Image 1 (cartoon, helix red, strand yellow):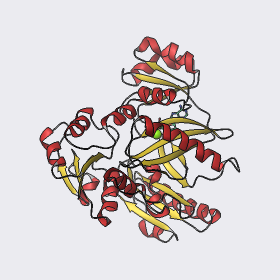
Image 2 (tube, rainbow, N blue to C red; image 1 turned 180 degrees about the horizontal axis):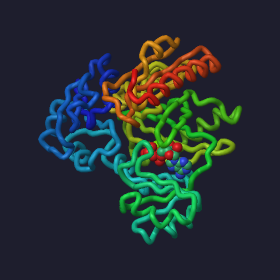
Image 3 (tube, rainbow, N blue to C red; image 1 turned 30 degrees about the vertical axis):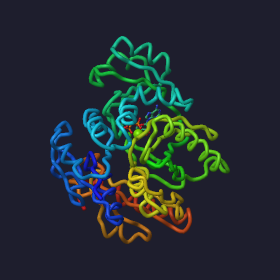
Length: 376
Ligand SMILES: Nc1ncnc2c1ncn2[C@@H]1O[C@H](COP(=O)(O)OP(=O)(O)O)[C@@H](O)[C@H]1O
Ligand SMILES: [Mg+2]
């Protein structure tokens, strides 16, 4: 059984690893000859606009899918026209453009931060007036890990914002004073079955995910079940509207009490779900494959408390991490570069206090490597 995957990054690599046990072979298309998934599966090195390469990706494949956000619409629609491609070009289009994405949430009555479109420099002032200061301006397309974003705190900062972000269409958003960020990973199979992982608590620094904890600690105390239900209700609206097949992730801001505002969605497996490899009954990667192949979904329950620490910029000293009980190291085979995600470490423990202690130990090891810039 072959699954064709657009993109060959670490998410593809982990999809392929999950597929191996099930006799599913992943074949990737990526312009980068060193794409991380190439160590695990067949890699076609070509541009996404190369129709011959897309035909090779599809050849003999039961299904095709993608592992990154910004799949060119042409590649997605070609795959959709000529075979089965999940989650589908329509879902990708909605998630690729921040204005379309927030508008979809609003249409489905899913709360979001206040937002307003900016199509030219003259729109900056009225848009920011609508959302209020402080505001975040974001490029509508191609942003990731906090790139293509600018926080405006003073009216004087408005004048230079349009050019500072590259003179491209933007969205203005209120800067939400959230208590914390959480994400929900949902999955729906081609046969219509749905499942949801427990909510995950995420800590970002300078726009990059650093730490996830799952299940998200119960904050405020006692709100857990209602919060989970609310997030699932919102996710279900999106799944239904998009006739979605595969793993879908929604990122939320949680504000005081148990209110959620949807920030963005990802039509794929997600960095905040990497803990599911060791920490859930069935990982997000295996469930994505099961979903697109129309197979029964695996159980999404947590096996206990887990945390995930991202390795960014430089690899940590491995024996130091391996000495921590309950630590599972995943390196993606990427060369070090400041701000680059090189791997992650999942931590498990019998209880929350032990997990916190282990997590802090690992965060310190990872931070030291990053500060040292590649020593290790
Ligand atoms: N409107 C907002 N209010 C407060 N913080 C925000 C807002 N938008 C983004 N952020 C912060 O920046 C991070 C990255 O922004 P996001 O919109 O998720 O873009 P991406 O993950 O695609 O780079 C968020 O996880 C959050 O920490
Ligand atoms: Mg995000």
